[in-house]
Image 1 (tube, rainbow, N blue to C red):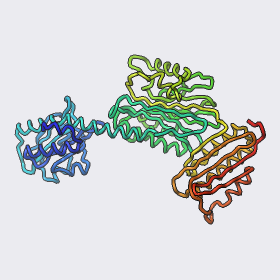
Image 2: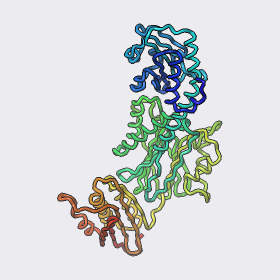
Image 3: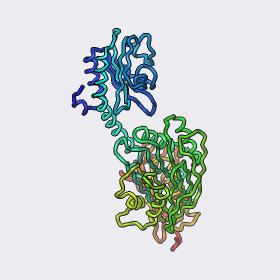
Image 4: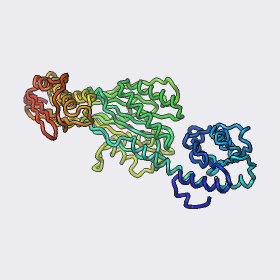
Length: 517
């Protein structure tokens, strides 16, 4: 039991080896360890010898109930000499014919983290020496168990955090997106801060920032549930205020005892407008084309997960080209010993300063101004959005799925308008490009997952849209589209189709008035 090598094994190996030694040392028939899940208030069977069903069936015992629950709640040893007359909530004990039980708390620095118990098939009166030996074993094992649990939680939390934050931000024409996530500490110290960017089916861009109360695996798992649900609600086309209400009711109904703040913003680049809704989150910072930063004033709804039936209100504001937006969690601005207003003012000042040579993005500028050498007391999630004028070229890489067509048409329409193309020609070119993209999806890929590229360029006389795929075209199905090329030729001045082993390229050309801008 004092073997130092046990401290360097995994939690499963540690408990399995330890229980084997305890069962033999106390001449018992069974031995088991249940570890406390504090967030749910239950003991979970984690390892057993002679009672392996407990682990396989995922036995859970509520605190203060049953044998193990009473040991944990009272924090002291407990003996049951005759199980047939005792109150137990785990039916496996009786099914296996256990007659007598001895259990002790597993404690670290006076805090119960689990229960260790042994049992016999014959009735037995456990002596004071038996109790002392089992308690000594639990005390010796407690620190090693805690260390193994922490290592396990660090690994799980780190994997979850890496998997749930976006690997890369989407490429949106006319936007420069940048982000940073900075944990205050490794492993179980990681919290539930997150950000997300979604390109919606209506062509708009959704921007999300949020912070789940707490740290560790539970906070990260709640963040994952909110993030996935939010994506689903937005893809269904709900208004932002309705999305926030749905998220709140979902979090309350899950009963996870976890609150969260969040802000959702929807950007319409065609109209240069922004809609925003907040659930107790810190205000977004908007930087106008004149470089002046101001915090977005909007109604503050209740944080998520507090009570059912909360209603939220969205705010509408202009977001013209050359505007910027900063979304963040409280770790960016909060400092011990100062008011939140001081932190917000520090952020405003940082956003008003010109970019330094080492700043490749707005997120870099904010980071270097506020956090470069500042010890972090809390996690930081930072998402920055810069609206840029469209140039004479535009590149898009899109999934070969019909859901992207609305966004393609809106992005292309916005680019064509910026190049001075008149409305009638804009409509024809946009529809022709959509038809070319649809043909690429249907003929080149079918049901396979793939992408296609759209390249747009303008010279003094023409605008040119090139739709390229890397699949192999097939003949149209009997009831397929069939007339795509005819439609394209009717809408633009020139259509060229090049087919090869590497894919198909469709080039659409529309002449424009000389000097149009």
